[in-house]
Image 1 (cartoon, helix red, strand yellow):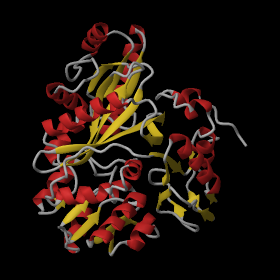
Image 2 (cartoon, rainbow, N blue to C red):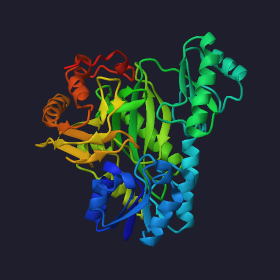
Image 3 (cartoon, one colour):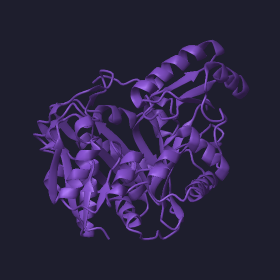
Image 4 (cartoon, rainbow, N blue to C red):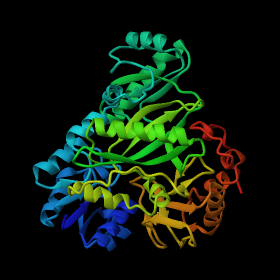
Amino acid sequence: MFKKILIANRGEIALRIIRTCREMGIHSVAVYSTADAESLHVRFADEAVCIGPPSSADSYLKISNIIAAAEITNADAIHPGYGFLAENARFSKICEEHGIKFIGATEEMINLMGDKAAAKATMKKAGVPTVPGSEGILATLPIARKTAEKVGYPVMLKATAGGGGKGMRAVWKPEELEGAWEAARQEAKAGFGNDAMYMEKLIEEPRHIEIQIIGDSTGKACHLSERDCSIQRRHQKLTEETPSPFMTDELRKKMGEAAVKASEFINYEGAGTIEFLVDKNRNFYFMEMNTRIQVEHPITEQVIGNFDLICEQIKVAAGVPIIGINYFPTQHAIECRINAEDPFNGFRPSPGTITIFHAPGGHGVRLDTHVYAGYTIPPNYDSMIAKLIVTSQTREGAISKMKRALDEFVIEGVKTTIPFHRQLMDDPNYIEGNYTTKFMEDFVIQKD
């Protein structure tokens, strides 16, 4: 087992990893930018190293600084959390070259599954259902036109190196294709330095359902069932739940088996998710694989006996084999992502100093956060400041508990998405489980 782990991240996920390290008897090293000097992950780690100024490019994304911090503290492993360098193949390789275990996917695996066109081709070989579309990269606009005619409109153009909804355009008619092609390529080039595109059939009324998997160094994998991540805004998840209200036992079994098949086909090691689109007829299609821990991993932990996914990640990285059985939810959990954003003003970011902070509590309530009264939210990073998770025996009970917890949750000094989530919990369609990834297009936030 590792003696010391450096956490190459910030905020609530860094604090989450530090806590598990403490419970496992592993020393932790926090890294931080000057903007994060007062963050709780810096206070609770055994050691902390400043790695640069507020800009991510000069701190959390600067590989040389992070490797230097690991070497001067004698860390024998690095946990990247999610975001930043978590799916950076070069970083994984550099860690290996320096004799530091990267608690995540290998360079080869990140390259294989990080390129969406290559990942789709691999899943086809594995026998996992995929969305009809182009065979690899679309080299030219004329080829894109022919592919769209073959697949049938509507289609979705996607950047092969994309993420977070960037480089994606829905195309409903042939005359829209050229404009969408140019816009998506420009956005992908600016965001990822890669304008390569591929195309898929646009699945109408889709659900975004992911399966949590864990694989070990022997090539064995298991799944921990699903999470429904369909409530999104501009392809950014807002809330998640497990089990999905749309799933049947038969569909859950099929999707779980497909996820395990996909993981074992590529000999995946570590925690990850196989992401699927599920249409209104409950046909499911592989969308992508995330080779890291997910933001929404706590809801899975809550419904399968307080399973610690971070602990499992660390154990697998240290060579400990998985138990090898699949897990299914025994309770219901919902997570609301609390962002420092103004939901009444287009979800505009709201950095600043928190003047009052009161955390909700009680039975079945979990709060993952790194903020507190007096903490200043910097404008340099993602606006998520907390994850509120509730667990109950039923979905109805979970919704009631989330309403109560949101009513108790007080954050003043900045705008937050708490009012949005409170309204969501009262929405009749949400209560009925009647939602798709298009839900937010029709959801109207009522001002107080």
